[in-house]
Length: 83
Image (cartoon, rainbow, N blue to C red):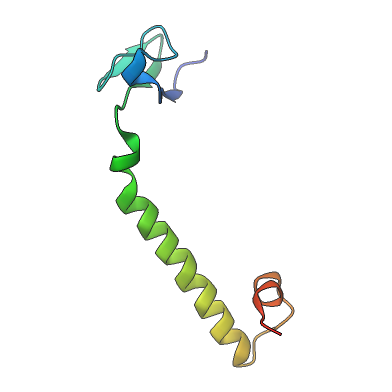
């Protein structure tokens, strides 16, 4: 593998899928960084909530501006209209 990639081994808690994986550690080998997070789901909850909130806000703003003179034929507006 060329130098620079990062591998996130989601099976690090059970020993990992990569030979160099170590749980809760960052290992570098041959220019490749291997991360072994143990509980990635609990660490990503805040970011996932922020991304979801931003997407909902973007949709609502798009729908609101569509009613105020925007184009009602754009895909997000067309597919979310109630009949």
